Length: 178
Image (tube, rainbow, N blue to C red; front, side, top):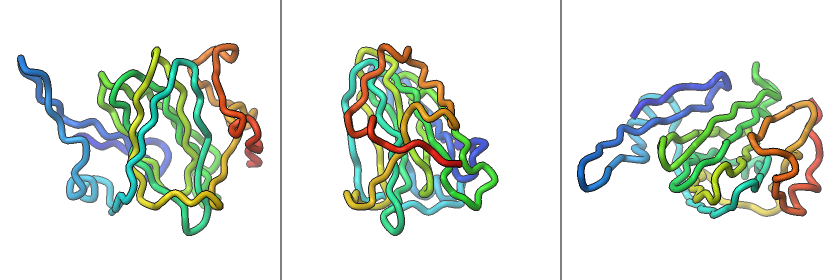
């Protein structure tokens, strides 16, 4: 597996080695020992989640606060998304900056998002099957978020605004105050 740190400290892309033959393919999507050796992080994932979304769906930007904060390892099984992580760690040199990358069932790329980040994605294909591991359990009272169209962050979701599909809940999220 090839692991590279993004410009946001602690946020890594992970590219598994894919072994293909006439039968199909095989790859190891996660190996805790290799992950810890290559990143210096020791994540113990306790919850796996999966979502299916249609083209134009924008989910996020979501995060959990306090002791319920979550690190996530995200990937796409089928389809393609534009995945975004925003650094919310006030003591970080990249506070208020974001990183975006296309994740797909074709490229098998994954993104590790540490605690202290907001996360979201937009669906670029007809549908996308999205999977993520969390190192802490979901806690409703600790959920928070930032509006997808925050002018300070100015995220390009790779979807025309008139094609975006958002939940009522996400439309009510506050703007980022850097």
